[in-house]
Amino acid sequence: MTVVNDTPRRQAVNRALSALEWTLVESDRVELDAGNAIERSDGPAGFIFVTTGVATLWVGDRDGIEVAAGDLVFFPRVHRYRIRAQARSSAVRVSMVPAVSGRTTVDTLPAAMVVHRFSHHEPQVIALIEGMRAGWASSDSARLGDSVICSRIGTMVASVAVRRWFELGCAEAGWLRQVQDPHISRAVDELHRDLGRAWTVDDLARVAAMSRSAFAVRFRDLLGRPPVAYLAAARIELAKQMLAHDHVTVTEISRRLGYGSDAGFSRAFQRHEGASPARWRAARRQSRDHLV
Image (cartoon, rainbow, N blue to C red):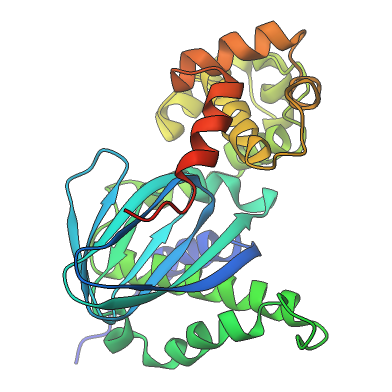
C-alpha cells in the first residue's frame, strides 16, 4: 500500500477544525407523523440528526433534500428550514452559537451540510447525540456541568460533520486556503469581537499586519466580499440573533452594533432582510416552530 505524504493538507484541516467551538443553546426531540412538517425561521446554527423515518428538508430557497434515519444536517450559521415527514419520523435538533475564534472557518462553510448515513460513518458519535437532549440542563434533574459537557459534545459533532463533508469531496476548491490564512483570520476574529466599532479598511489592515491595498484584495478573494460589506452582513446576522430574544429592544441592538440611530439600523436591516426589525421579529414569532 502506498502512503501519500499529505502532512500540509492534514495540518490545514486540523487548524480549521480546532477553530470550531460552539456553545449549546437548546436541544430537543421532534416527532412528526407522515405529512406533518415543522418550520424554523432564522434559527441559530446547529444540526438535525434523523433518528427514525424519512423526511424532506428545505433549507432557505434550496430544493428539497431527502433525509432518512441516520442522516445528519449541520447548519454552520443562522438559517431557515422546513422539514416534512414522508413517514412517521423523529429527529434530535440541537441549536448552538459559534465562538468568536471560529468565525473565519464558519463563514467559509455552506449554509447546510448534509452527511448521509452519518450513523454508519461515525457510529461512535451517535450515542452522544442521543444523550444530548437528556443531558441538556432543562430541568431540576440536570446534573452539574451538563451544559458545558453538552456544548463540548456539540463542538465534537460539528467538527466530525465538517471532516466527513471534506472527506467526501464536498468542499470547494481552495477551501483550506481560505481558512488557514492567519492574517485575514486575525482581522475577521477582531471584527467579530467588536461589531459595534466603526471599523475601517485601514483599521482591519493594521490588525492583519498588511498594507491596505493587499488586505482588501486578499479579503475579497478569500471571503467573497469587501470588508465593509462583510461587516454590514455580520452586524445584521448578530441583530437577527438578538431580535430572537423578545426582551432585547431595537434601540439596544442599534447601539450595540454601532448604528447612529434606530432609523439607520432599521434602514440597514430593511436592505438586507426586506423587512423592518419589528416586522421581522413579529414574523419570526408567528412562524417559530410552527406545525403545519
